[in-house]
Length: 347
Image (cartoon, rainbow, N blue to C red; front, side, top):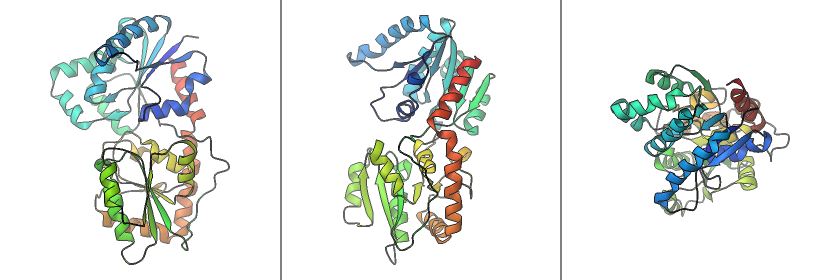
């Protein structure tokens, strides 16, 4: 059995790829798979050159390299060299795209050198994995002709025991969960304003804000005197489990070109109806009326109206919760591991 080398960032740092491979623990379940960590303790100017040298030594004993880039300036240039080295040494290549910056995509389209780099490296992969039909279409337009697999990310399920569909108890505050990086494009300010519209006449809802990011201090000031908003901060492991358990609905009105946000998969796994927007790979997982609702709008009043509509129908709410628990089985780590290993075996 040929060895597989998966290139990943430092797993102790926050980020989608690190979170995914912390959950999958794929290298602990298959003896032929190992991780190549993109970090070391050298000075910044030596860090990456030494990683390329280490990589050249490492790949001599492997048959396949799995790369996890994002289509942005930092990742594209860094990871294209790993892809080129993989192909130079006649190793098989799997490219798993996790992020897609549309501004950088346009830059590649209009830049002959970047387009040449893309075609000579990433587009030579035997298999490419994407997180939605939108990204498959974009790769085909770039001229990729090999196999494309639409895959999901994975969510942690180790704390879940006999998850049951949720119900609304209207005698208690209804908890709306915003769980993400705290950035304007992720929709945190839309979530805050939506809550205030919902509670305009009477407090029936509570917004739980979980995460960290560059807007953190600004948000703390804005919500300081608002008793209907609970600041949770960055959560992991059992703390995240408890947060998801006590939430009633996941609210993620992002305008960012998402891949497939882990937070939505986590919400579905816990039976939370999802309220989000049709960006990136989200429409591939969230079907309107089946797993929640996707609104084009960025207007808080439109989200407030949809939340009221959902909460007022316990039958509809319960049905969506049940659908999400069932559908989320495809995100379970053991199932994602099996599908990835099957791809490795096929090439």
